[in-house]
Length: 150
Image (tube, rainbow, N blue to C red):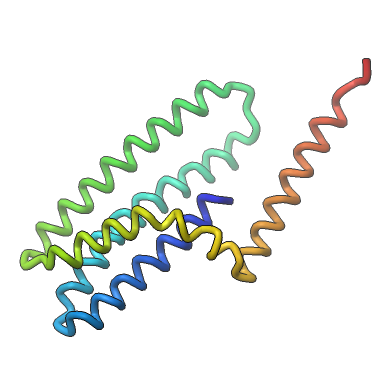
């Protein structure tokens, strides 16, 4: 659940920074640069979260925690590669890059984790949080039902 809230916070930050840069520079170069850099980070994070959710749904609860940890490590490595590739492509495609806008979008997208408590207070995300809590309670009760008292 925290990853979905992080993605929502990151998306809000990327859009907010792009809008703020448009207010500072009406030509749109700073806004596009901020959107390209923040969007590169956001897209890579979104693909990693989607892959992790797909893996969790397809495999279910597995007993092999080492392979799960290793797969998350490999996914994180590919996320970093994808982020670097997208950032490089955005610099190549948007040739007259506005560096203050680009770096602002990048830095603020990377620090969007600090906005998760504020994003979680939105009504739509409270419903998702409650659903996630209910699912965790069901898993814990099903696991404890299988235990026999000694």
